[in-house]
Image (cartoon, rainbow, N blue to C red; front, side):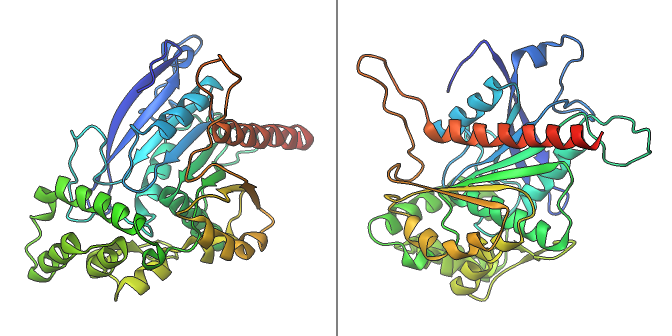
Length: 360
């Protein structure tokens, strides 16, 4: 992991109210904010957050220890913001926090992200308003950044909340990098369908003690079929009747199970929700992304239906590999995508300040 004297790191385990799932959130705070000064920032206390928060959702079979996550967290912290990565249920990264439920994460369940966002919202510092307005914050706003499967979840969450006007006022924007838009594991070709399936099987085996507590014979047979499935598409189809899901309307109630893989893929696909996104959303995809670009390009029209969505297509970058090439003899290059995301957030913050000044 990256080490810096300019930041301080904190690990927190959040328990979700809906089903008791344990979600590990890794925080990175600028050192000057963590050390104090005028007022110390404490990301775990109500009113303890006085600045923008960048909440990152990692990709499939990944966690907060992966390089692209650590790099984005450091970029955000170096800009003076608070960075956080939500490890999806069962994806602790360090192997110290096991899944507390027999349900792992999946591409369509936005309930855990919703729970973490709400928890962060309660920790934003508020200020007294002479007009007696509610939800006036000194802390925040919150920006969501998702990668690959995490990008799909971020987009789906923003669309669900935007469709019904329930998006918290402190969520100001999002970025989705390597988002397939349409989830359909059956369309992923060899060898990646096998590789991705192997990663999910590894996650199942790591959390087997939690899954073994479920005594429904149908569930056990489904998990056995999933472990024996040769591809990610067959695995999804086997596990779909027992996957956790949520309604796409308030109060976004949690439930269990899909009819089959096709039902799961349809419900999970964020392209259905993109037109309803109500805050600025940056979608970034590389033309040579062999995993998601085909689906992304075929569903690009849904992004163009929303005035809030900005689409960036790069010539190269592969799947989440937007590294810059430095001049000869200058060491390793930085990440173009980190800078692009940070600049996008910086522009949104500047626009918010301009709007406030105009309204004053």
